[in-house]
Image (tube, rainbow, N blue to C red; front, side, top):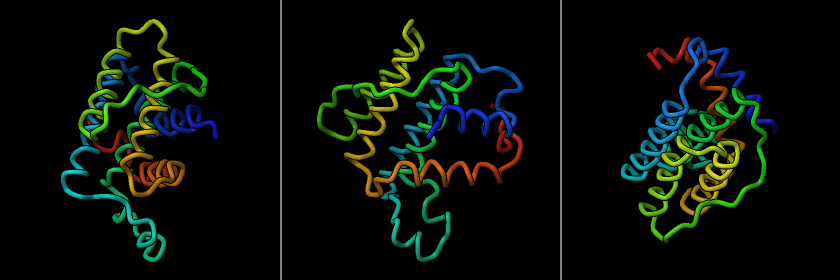
Length: 165
């Protein structure tokens, strides 16, 4: 899938690019999604895909660990689409072994991305790192399912989802 194109077009349709975002704002928003994923862990909110398939109720997916990681990836894909960056295979950051330490490694890399001259590479590295983090700690492993469901939900939320930025 061409997620940079798909996610950027969805963001444009929802008004997110009426005023261009800075690199710092983009990565701050990525970090905010990662922190929401940590909050989902604190609340023991993971996607139960089987329950979702039976009920077809998005509330069983919304605000879960996997949903928030999907949001972080959507924000990176959107930024890549805005900049015409290609989605390429890249190595993830090196993890240290606990959820908290591994999350901090990803966040540190997102902070570093604001200063990087090789931003396309760093964006791909972040995506690979979030994917590995997801597969390591998530319960629902299907990234594409979560990104697609979140894009569908976001399309119903209106202009900038009622937010300033």
